[in-house]
Length: 163
Image 1 (cartoon, rainbow, N blue to C red):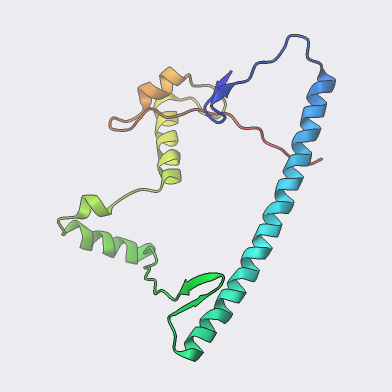
Image 2: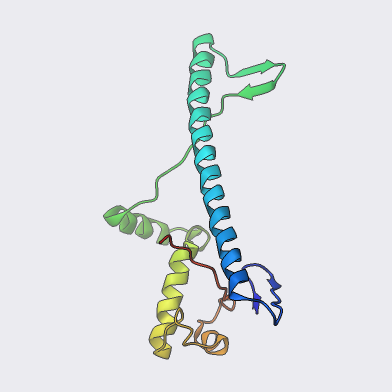
């Protein structure tokens, strides 16, 4: 079966056994465990890095510096700016403000997960079938997809749960 998740078709020989499937599953679980351990290590190292960065920031401030160069390379203190996304009433007020501007269309966007959920609900409501239960064919999904959107992509994943 061709799957967009991996981008290739996996060919299975006719003489495979359930024992081989079990071995593949065992390998999959071992790799998942190793991956989780590496993610934890990465997370720990990122926290350690953050602490050192805060200390370096304090040293730069102490010395009245914004840059420092050493045999390891150079660092710079930079200033960042961000605005939290509005919520609730603030969101409504901000959208009203934006509607009066010339650049409204350029500023308004939708999160891809929100779009996926919205379109999935629209397609399921119009078709009376569910996408996740394989009730809908790709052709039906495309038929019910609103104008202006690319055709949805269908992929399959392996879900793993411990005993």
